[in-house]
Image (cartoon, rainbow over all chains, first blue to last red; front, side, top):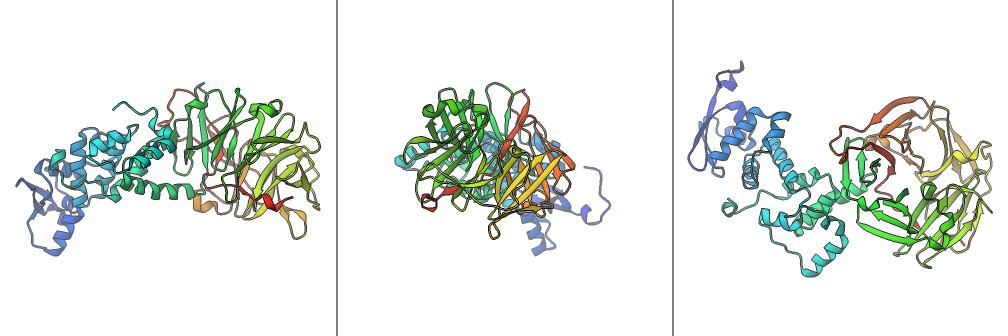
Length: 154
Length: 351
């Protein structure tokens, strides 16, 4: 990260502190991609260290890397690297930090992972309770029966 | 770890984004079956999806085990649906959101991939009139009930048969072009109108085997069999189209009971396939242009766009990318499908 951009504002560095205490020094223009951080800066101009209470260091590192490198090619490879748990935690981070590009990328990754999977699989993976009554469930199965055929084996 | 997450990142906004990334109708239905919250998100998305007036292209492949997809030209993407059990069945048209297929077991399969509703109608009693690959059909529902009618035209013999679910039977209206040679039909204002080879327009009765011809002035005096009957903005239109050679469009003026020739399509866009012709009154809103005729020939994955003023070829749209072609076989565009259309008939309107 030796190259510096010519604009004066971009050379200012900020420190982000993850929930587990890990510190990250980032350029202002990178930090600004996180709308939550931007709002923080707008409120207190002189701040140098911004706490990010909901995000672990490991995930904040990934998020910062994403912002620096995002492009079509990077995004396509990015989504393949993470398991479902990490995807969800990264999405939590992206939601909290309010980074719409990353939210889209992660949602696309999640959509890909649930393609051709049964509702049971999806519930298991996301720890969702099936709140349909047995009657509703039977009705759903009957109405949408094609959707229950030909899904991947869980 | 899952146990560490007290809250799910999948709030309504994220679920909405995810649902829009699912391009298979099967996946969307699976999505809606997960739980009540996901079902609610799907419902909102799906309602908007089905209200869209933007036509989808019914796309299939030349491979024997046919897979159907619905291609959106403005969005340049295909929506898939596993309809592979249509193998061996012939496509007869799309009507009221249903795909209608006919097969060797003398059954008409009507399937709506958007609502997952299906119907099967046995046509053994009129089997000799069904030459599958030239059949044209119309499916309409009775107002305020679950009853429905199927109007079927055999393209070779020009036999016209009508099935009514309330009687569970087929009734022949015309045999081998007698007493009328009907070439097309459409529903407007809960009435079934039919076009004959003499460019006459008649009202089809569902209470008797009759077609009451309208007395119209200025009937076009040209080769009849290329005409198609359609409606737009509450008006009946008659279109005759041969790429680059002929484009005649007439509006039926009920006030003067006459054919009125249109010099151009004006704001309209026409969507033409060998099966049917449709019109959109405000194509710009749906990703298409005014005064254009969009033509698919059912033989290639290509849509030719003609000017509505002089029938000149303006551009050729082809299938974007090959991401959603599931088999290594040639895709082709069969027909137009307007997902928002739902024809209804009122039995009491015509005696």
